Image (cartoon, rainbow, N blue to C red; front, top):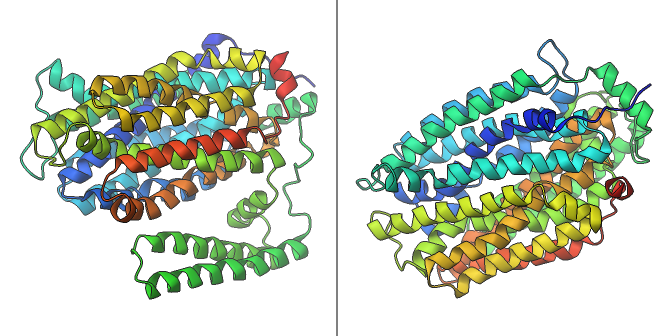
Length: 508
């Protein structure tokens, strides 16, 4: 038996290169979808509910794809088939999205686009765990962070570049997407497909037999790991069935309260999500009770129930982190255009100038993240991954809150430095800490489940931020950005309670 060999810099480069394209898709989405929605007639308080497609899609798609990729092996590989299928679908969606004629079609295209991107993205996280030994995983996720940052720099700045360097119009008649945005999405489609294709062609995966041999040689199976079979079907089914009743009733009660007190309709997303989790628990419990323990729903729900302690601790960190990020992504454009540029008219030149500058700001924080990607592992070796992540999140919180005090748009770039440091760490440190606690044969499934704690806070944000912005903040999106900064501080505090089981290997 032999341990996984160390891969060279260029081997890690090739296996991570596809993330350059994936981030083209996400960056174009994050920087421009709110702008597209407003152009097609959405009001500022309606934007969060329209964004709901993205987190809901990730909640459903990622664990399914993770479970499927764990159990896939053919002549194309284990993870690579999913890279390629997602790339083809996402590229088509990127071409269609900016040509949406109406608001509801744009919301639907966001759903399709996000699902396609997720098909490619989730296996890339598990890919690092498959291919790299423990001591190289921080470097592997840092390389992904570098490509995420690099791709996002270019993609976020594309509308600004096309307008200011090539003279392509950034305005259009009412209800029409500006040409600079449309062409940016076309270029993003080409970049997505090409970058993922490079990784598929240039990388060879270990076979299931080799992975088992490496895992046995490293002796790296955590205490919380369990066999593929559900060990106590009767006890597990009883727990799921009992809890399902509680969750379903809670969802119904909250829905009744929303109706009775005439609360805002988007809050039904929150109550429906609670009831949906109860229904999934009910299905899983029923399947397990009938002896159908290999069904995908039963396996994913059981694995979530049995997830390692480190993963549970990181889940809390991720919840507050991604609530903050979602607030930033959906509200930076309306916050900056109104708070700093003084306009909410999406047809005006000033609004579009502000929206373009938001793209530059997003490019800056992603660019800084790319630069920091290789420095953070060095800092982590000299301190710890937890300390590095905590400091980074504090910087991100300060960056978001500082936007409130800015009147000169150029100073927003300083705020984005803090956000960029946080982003670099968010894309690498939690995954590097998590991977060391996971069983190798469940890497994809658990990475998909871990995504729950990214998308659930986004769904919550989509449910309540519109209410907060409209009724508590008087329509001022800047206060939702401040709320995001506070959430980032909470995440930084919770990092210190995480048990990093691989911490000693990082320092060696």
